[in-house]
Length: 128
Picture 1: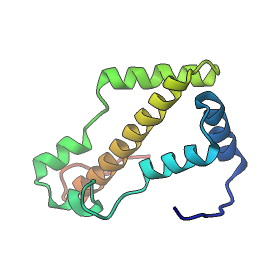
Picture 2 (picture 1 turned 180 degrees about the horizontal axis):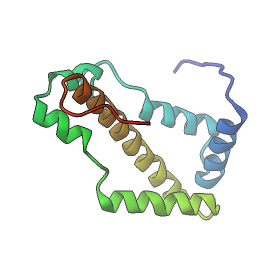
Picture 3 (picture 1 turned 120 degrees about the vertical axis):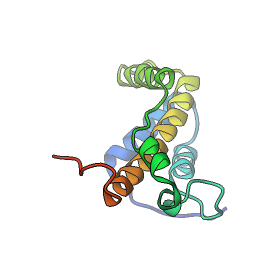
Picture 4 (picture 1 turned 45 degrees about the horizontal axis):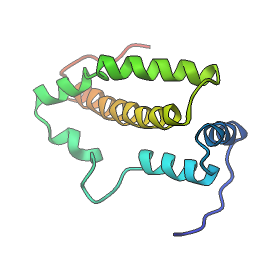
């Protein structure tokens, strides 16, 4: 284990502290878990940044149009509501962290696919 000192925006620390209270885990453990979910690995076992460029057109478009499964999306919405109302149990807080990780990684892959689809002329650029 490597010790690291980092300055966080107050709002991020407050979110971690609330999750710490809900799960009875240390803030450092919450932050470690959050980083491990969001930082990509370089061992090739997870989705690599250049992977989208290697997909055929159909796979790029499928990924660009992908969405979280409806059951997971609804559960994420429910848990976010419970978090906002400060009603989360420790188990629900852990589930929320897991679903947020899935959502973020899916969003990142979808974004990469949208960029690639525009580069290939498979779809027009998104309009503001």
